[in-house]
Image (cartoon, rainbow, N blue to C red; front, side, top):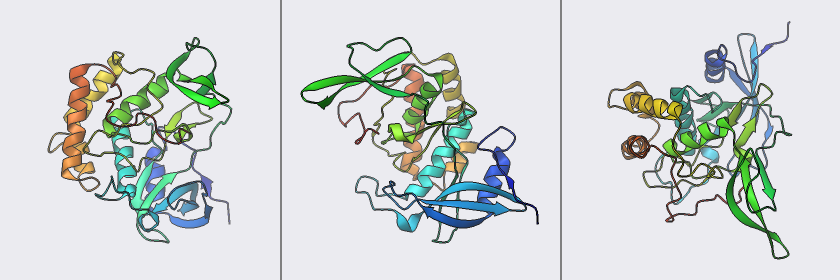
Length: 276
């Protein structure tokens, strides 16, 4: 018997195949991801001679959150993927909702990362150097502070726009996955789409800056796709509540009206904890 064909981490031609494999394939649990706050299982999925590594997060393994009482985290993860795909930016790995060994949950393609890629740093200067954007001053011990910075990277800037749309309450450094094909992915989108403003992120470097022309065009496309009978609204309907869907429309409209990246509201901690 020949070995199964491995699905690459991502390419335009394999997205549909990867989603089909995740949805239809046989899941085999290989281990547990220990640093995850909810049950996250490392698996392989096989179907018709194809195989890929993936993450399976069963709904049964979720811890209830007082501030996200509606729905489950798995559906929010799938909803974030749907919005990402609608942008055309492909910032979230292929993700589906399916049954598995421990019941219904989300299943997401595993991304092999390039760990030496530097996206975040602490510097002792008052201002960020060329190619970096300032986030916040942080205590680093012994009465010293350092400036937290992130790369002035177009991939991160797109992700900042996506986070503003989906109202991501937990954009940590560990949720950024640079891949060998020079793509950048965001993962762990369980605490998103709240009807109230919950945006917490390390990507504040563009706060208040004008949105790019590309971002404005993408937001306009999202606005059209989120109309009552729009394709994105139809896909999100089973995944989030009607109030959350309306709030998503409102955030897109607000971003288009302002024409700039959002700034911290001051009503909610702007930085997730722990930040990494």
